[in-house]
Length: 521
Image (cartoon, rainbow, N blue to C red; front, side, top):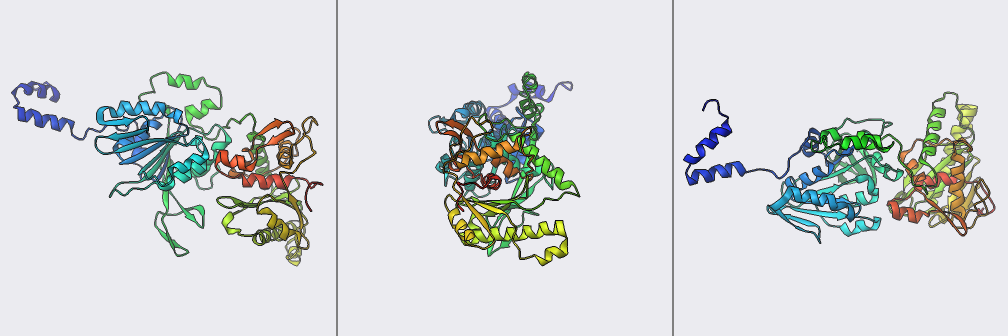
């Protein structure tokens, strides 16, 4: 028997075991056999990661959905896995049946698994932005999102607010999976995990490295450690975040099925996105997107090239676009324009601008600061010091919808300020460059004229700051042709579709808008 394997030896001994000994052996062989275990190194790293918030994936076929299921049924007591639409949950439901089998019962109507050991797994969907409110106050110790780039930032941030547990010792975390975004609407994912996914991030992070983030005065910022700190009589507890990449080769179940050949034959950019998890390659635009994403990127590249030139001078300030916050998560954004060069945007949380007087004060401060900067660039520091109280001679275009009227009223009464109130809902007589399509209203002309100015062939060679939020905002609006002419999607409709307000994009479009007879003065 010395040449036999240990397993063979055990089999040879079975006939000599008593019933009690057989029962003990069966117990030893079945105890602690998990329903699921990580099948690859990236899955194991993600499973064991201490991050409060984890983004896993990148390429197709990396075992992303399996990770969410595995965590739910082996590491958490009460979990939920979301897809944007219920229809897209079918495959993950089937995979759950394969893994759980007889170890639990599934209610297909309520989409709830109840495992024999007391664990619970919910499946959910938030097709429309307002659907997120159905999940208000519903706690889970694991909030899982499959194909994160299909969700809006508002949906994600709202839902994870109820990641919690009352079970002693139970870990709480958020895990999201997904491929690179296929359109500008998913850009927010790259922004949120910018340290890992944005090649221009000033402080890049390695895969799996923890970074810490905290909300300070309503704005998220990176902090050095996870240690709690005091801020305005409040103890703030930072949360950790990381990204772990996974590719098809990491999934032993798909790596040999021929799936790789399918991905290799896909057209670009899908090929690089799904095969390699490339977050840098261009996203596909919606056919009705007003401003092509590539046009905005080219304008941002021009900005960097000009700014890097030591002899570059911006010239006089010509306009400021003021998009006034309407409350909630909206921002008060100021966009300065110097002919065909736009300066960096100044953004303020809406709650920090409670009234028109405060908003007007921010505009005046920018006019004064930029007058000093321009004077210093052209005439020197001494001349600038002599004019430190002067205001730049520029038009300030203020969005009049909602609370913007109060800001305009204050500015209009100030000496030395050329304030123009813009009612984007009022009619417009302008047409597109061809003269064939009339604009339905000022909002349509505001965005269409910016589109034409950004045209690489026939445009105005505009330079826009390399702001990822600005890129996403300018690429958000869509258009259609109505009986009254070209109609551009309203801000309210964009908020409903994307879950965020395109404040930065609107500020730049306002700054680009030429003063005309339909502007209030």
